Image (spheres, rainbow, N blue to C red):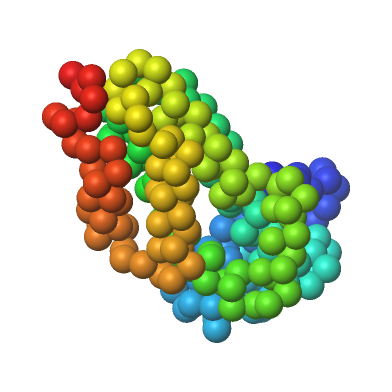
Length: 214
């Protein structure tokens, strides 16, 4: 998660020496805007710091190099997704199964998910650092898949998912498809929503056909 800068840390480019309260998040948000606008080729220390309106050297005050910065951006955004979807099992019995799974999948996809994933795979060192962090227990796709599995199992106990459904495989199919869309820069948000809706319906059925659906 983002680490707050110390209270006396100042942007040397600011004429008034205004402290930056959360420099990591400021840089991360700037990088997302650069990626969305210019793609991975436009992501440089200069482009990020200019977009963030801060000193050029600020990025290297907090990250070893650009690869470290991009890796931490990817890990931070996946950690946020995992935290947001962690309570998913608590939604069992509310709404419909299809609505809940579709919303969860779209949270994974996110507005900037594809461009952030593209930045990771376009830089070999970044991909390796992210993979190593996930292998070491950092929250990522595995945590999301586990949350979806527990959600489906909870719905199964309530009779809203078929009793013979393989919940871990359903969770794997859904998270795996979203991962594919992220890695291969799938459709835009509107087309992505329609595609995810179709996928969820194919996996668990529509609300009118799902077991025990109201």
